[in-house]
Image (cartoon, rainbow, N blue to C red; front, top):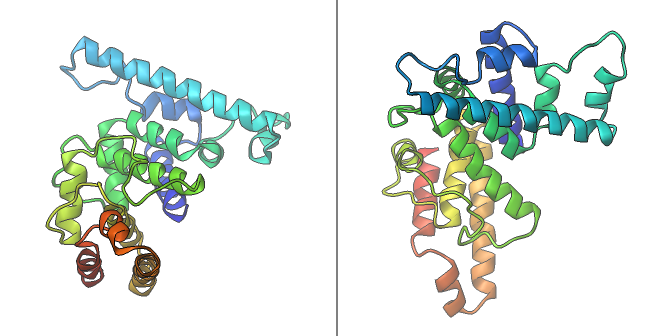
Length: 249
């Protein structure tokens, strides 16, 4: 939740600064990829894809607003129940977007806007040609967050709803000093979380405390089950990877 809030704030600030407005209509017009603002030379079928995504985004935002208003969410009712306001500003909409909807919004931004937000966060873009890490990492964290919220099994990442791209793996390998990343075990998600905590200037003490807490839980689990079970559920190099992670932090 901390990472989600921080990324939302950085994205919001960047979009409003670049657009020069808090209007959702200006964001749709200037920051979202569409048929009319596609780069020169873009094929018509790609332009139509952009436009379809834009229309779907507009619909999802309106649905989020309608749901929030129906539930009497003060972040939304404040604007619709006040005759002096005529639209909900971007910052209020960001407050009610689910993490999945937020990820989709990021995926709909122009590549230039995604690059600006990625740089503001500090994401390594050396292997991210199409500036997709910004939203794909949000999707990855969303899957983990939802699994935890529903008390689902997480050790083998069965909650994963997307196939991690090569840039998603390569960025973490470069930044976190790992020999490999494949998102097949929970350890890789711990590494991703720590990468973001580092980017967001969380203190080394706090990040290492988070890692040690994960190690503690892992050891408690290992000591409480049959070794034949723990050998299957815990990846053999998990502890060594956590040690590398602490050294990098």
